[in-house]
Amino acid sequence: MTNGVVVSSADSVDIVFVLDDSTTVSSSNFELMKSLLSQLVANLDIESNNTRVGIIAFASHVRISIRLDKYSSHAALRRAISSLKYHGGQNNTAGALKYVRTAMLTPQRGDRSDVPNVIVLLTDGTSDDPAAAQVCRACSEVYCMLLTLYTKTRADKPRYAFV
Image 1 (cartoon, rainbow, N blue to C red):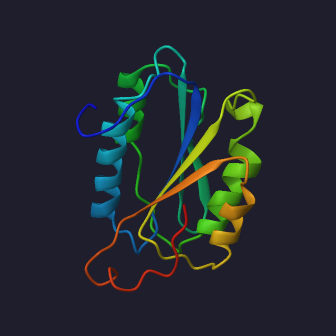
Image 2 (tube, rainbow, N blue to C red):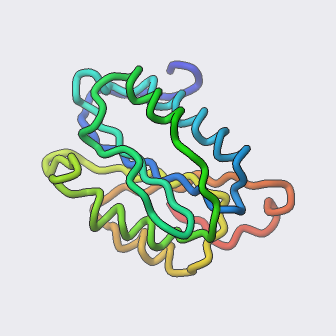
Image 3 (tube, rainbow, N blue to C red):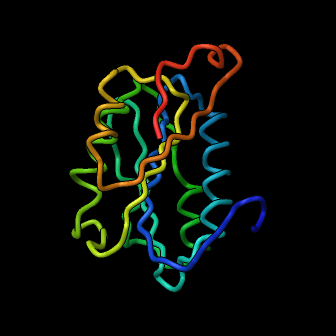
């Protein structure tokens, strides 16, 4: 355990972090997400190529911020995370998860077919499309985890959660 994060470098893995940068998240919470993400990746086995990290950001539109095969050092990856920009807009969780499955987890974007995929969704838990949970369930070959950031006004009203 390092900095409160459990780390295992026994197996290779491709991890895609899906960051919600919609208006409901807010720019200050997006900065918190980036800080958390930077701390997490600092403890992953990136330099030996055991772990590849990709990042998608989404609001109304989905954007590949970092391809899985883009960075092979902690320093470069953390600089790239630090430079991510907040966009705001509607929350298109279903579109983001579909994009991960159809566009990000491909060999052209650095996905390795012989390595397990992990998707980590960081969001405030509100989606403008209720199909988001269905899309995640459709990823039966992928481990999908939801990390939800709630504000006080939303803590008592989650719309859905899935793991």
